[in-house]
Image (cartoon, rainbow, N blue to C red; front, side, top):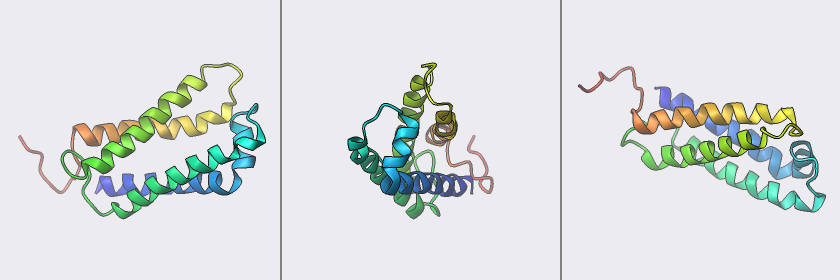
Length: 133
């Protein structure tokens, strides 16, 4: 199932980013936002904890059919996470002084926002089931 691949990919991406922010926020955040004070590491840890929570949700739902009416809360939670994240990152990238490394975060976020949006509106993309007419 394609929704299984999407869930696993999203869980892996959020796990890596969440662990990096949880344990190395003081090293990661200055690379992403150079003017951020060291005392704001708690903000990165809080974001890392939230990403780990969504990663756990995706991992636990990896074998379920997602899309359409199936798994709608999981799909919608991921859509909101990736869509708002992509808009925020793309807005930050309009600034010429923004670190170019943000593209490595904005690209997957934008792609996953589109995939989860399609899952929400179209359906689970299961090739084994015929399309309803």
